[in-house]
Image 1 (cartoon, rainbow, N blue to C red):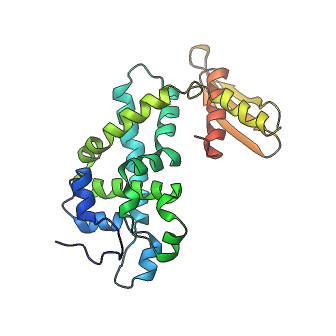
Image 2 (spheres, helix red, strand yellow):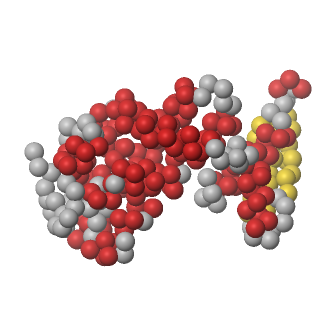
Image 3 (cartoon, rainbow, N blue to C red):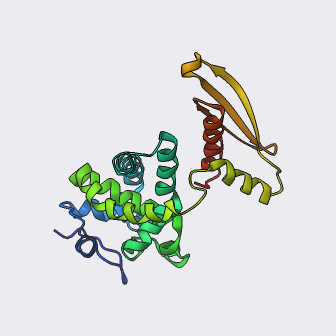
Length: 239
């Protein structure tokens, strides 16, 4: 069944995209919705839904699937390392790179203004569309289909990420960012330590300048400081 209405112009159809990427969608209306930006819906009265709800769902599915994949793929990784690796794999830039790799831009249904503004190349829209496709695939086929589809992408991307020397060193990365902007060296404060000696928990806050701060906990000051730096980097959109 044809999930009309289709956008005018040289836009790849959902059927073609599903064939090209071996996406096992039974419900092509669901895939069409995953590709539909609100700007297209606003210009077409016969289009009822855009992809924002599917984007929300896909974001949650990706967090789970990528976390489970890392747990099984890298049994030697610590919790902190897996957290940082997952952040690198699901950040906007990486998901946009996946979308470019799959050429999802060719199938995105955008309004005229969004198309003219280069929406098919914008990382925010590419990331959102990728998440929406994942959300749609989950609804249509479940977690196993999502895992099968995304695993090759994760394998390739993780190899490149592991070559980055600072991926597991958020403190160094934060210090480089702070010094490049003349904020000086990040300042770490231990707010609290609790628990017996064999099960200590430290609560640490990091400050950069007067406007930026992050908080983390861990079984040692070092781990807690890394968690705080990680939290601040994530809030800055650097992971």
